[in-house]
Image 1 (cartoon, helix red, strand yellow):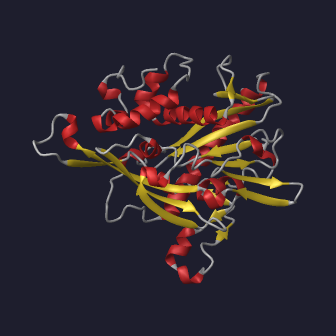
Image 2: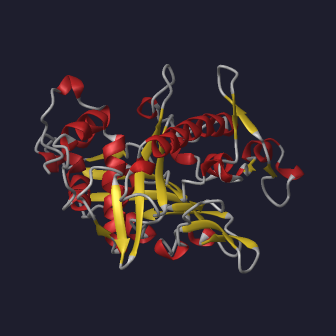
Image 3: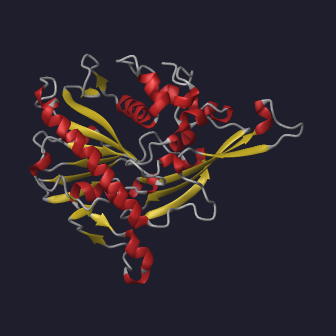
Length: 366
């Protein structure tokens, strides 16, 4: 697929698509084309959708690259769900979905970067908005399963995984796992309370059971989707807030004329507390699967085997019934967040001054 050859009018092109067509993003475009190698354009409209809506098709391309790296085989004989996967004789389904901005709310690309205040001020507000939009996305796909997918013979009896990516607001890439764990398990890490009074919480931010999150219209959403059998058809949720163009930049080719500086937060030994690391992309050494999180449903009709996604740095949350305890794998080596700045020698583009100069461009998100 020729993702980056425009086939739609410029007026219809997504803001991100216009941005990545710039010359300084050539190396990053090569990364995405590598991810998409072999990805089928099943309905003949994927390139058009990529250029118009960007985030949702980008998420599917990323997932395809991840699944290919895991060594899964693909069955493309069915139009839906998005992925029918197998690892030897073990088969399961994956449906991709993105959490998007509510009508009238700022889009994620509307953010304005302020070097003096690069982080959102109100973490609690960011988390609340993310919870509402993530819950909406998951609920809509659960409904689609019960009304449609459940009737498909190639789906029945197999684990069914939702792959969820958040693009619901500016600074979404800083949410890490706080909103998704609240939606699925009603487990909220109250970082806002910690920021207001760190001395009151010497062991770090407290955890709370919120019970509900309230939408702007006053309606309550009950949290803890996986705390009972209400979503027993969903075996697990695959989630990442780091599968952004920032990852593409971090994995792109580095030359003397193009260097990417990466600021990251990682889980650390022994218990996964956040630790900052900064350096050039090759020094940080981020991988394709860094930032992936898998949340298993203990009430699933067809549980997903944790071994399917077990990998260095990939966080998995599940109930180990044999040991009678809750497990959170790889938290101490997980990628929490990332921000990227790429420095490019501008005269390489043929429009610079006589003397070489450097231009800096921030990644689209994260």
